[in-house]
Length: 235
Length: 402
Image (cartoon, rainbow over all chains, first blue to last red; front, side):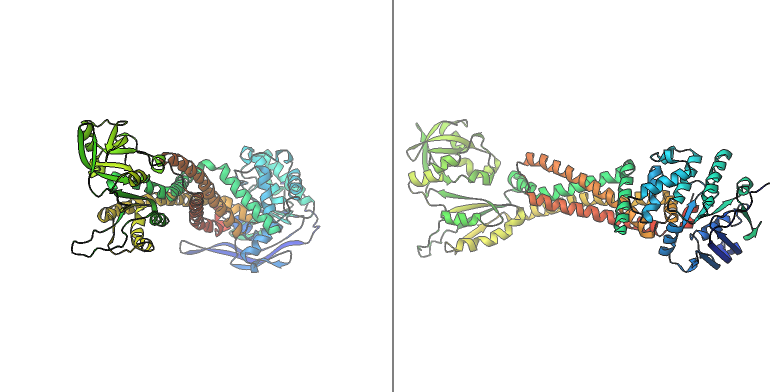
């Protein structure tokens, strides 16, 4: 399968992990989800992390998104040690530097598209006057500006996912973590979502890590890694 | 400034959510509405209801009425010049006692009065009463009406006769409007008194105090006072205070203050348990509402686990989630409590019409403050645990929750 040529690294290192390991206690035995993972991602890079179910893809994504703490290893983002942060500081890093896109693109169902996109801006203390500009900008980047006031429960699966990407973008993060972003949409919508990611990465400011088990999706990323039994292999 | 904006935005979002999902919260909200309204009604109207019970319930047996009089001197005692009559200034002073509702004085003719019409003659007890007498005893005329304030003030020659008197003189009870000679003076009968509660009064003739004192010989000055207390809780304190008040005007040796103490005790016991029952009902309703809110908030935390995870993933701090869920619980309680205040006010208006008495505004405001405060405390109590649970939720676990 042809993959696009590796994009030129135009930015500084967004994240760097070394010797990362994660072990869980389960049913009396220790389960190793990740072992000795080393990874560096730079601004403008789009990295696919592939692997079959249960190989630790989501665990890696959660650690990179400061949702889980690793058992061992080091993790630096923009030069800062992420493993020394308390919960409050981690939340601050998440809202300022990280955007999440989930498989089912969970939205707050009782809210409209606008209200869903406003949430990260509220948590990030963005001024009220600036919020509409940011929301409009994010929706335009995923071609969803026309759905601004639409209730989220009336959106199609593909539209929801693109709104999810817009929500991840709205705080202008330097890292987007996408967990199976095309997992619940058809192929055409999957391609549209990947088009969005390519455009976002193309600006050279945002790094994107896409966790997927779909080779077609992974093929759209210039850089691909594979997780097998908790070990990350660069391909 | 930013924190303020963030805080108010979270409040706005949470309140909006409660209103959008109001049907889900209908049950517990209704319980709080009823509980709040009930508490306001019980607190505001309990004094008025007690007062009406005092006046209207025959079963109370005049438990809140006190009689004040001087004992007769013993035959072997020396005659004394000490005055034994209750002058108007004594009545005025007694009316100022905090627990006193109505004071009435009566005077008696020292010997039975000659009463008759035509050939029918008899001797009956003549009682001179003031205008408060009927209200104090809550008597209802069997026929006609009692003489009013004007009749007393103008000293009109009118009278109310007991049913036995009417039968003895006229051989019938329907004698309203008929004339009657009392001590050779002509009086018009305005009403007839009868009934179980009247007791010996069916053999009495009642005339206005002013008329009796000016026209009938051998009439004493007021020798006996009746006081109706505002409530049964005021009876003992009022009885204890009476000698002190009377003592400012008269010698109080031989002064007697009598009450129906046995009945009072029974009434107080029944009233206590009724009050406990009413309060338990109201508080139970409120607590049930609180439990409903606790339950619904717990269910909300469970069903919105992923939402909590997502909010934390996009940058919400623990306190943001805590504020959100607490605001939802408090909004629900406050909204329901305010609806309860409106309902309570409507009930009070309706009941006031029936009781013909309206609670004081400050009492209503105080009970409203208590009820709303209690509802908010319930919201706080019911919302704090689910909110803490939501705020402390691990993000990864929340995001994996199906």
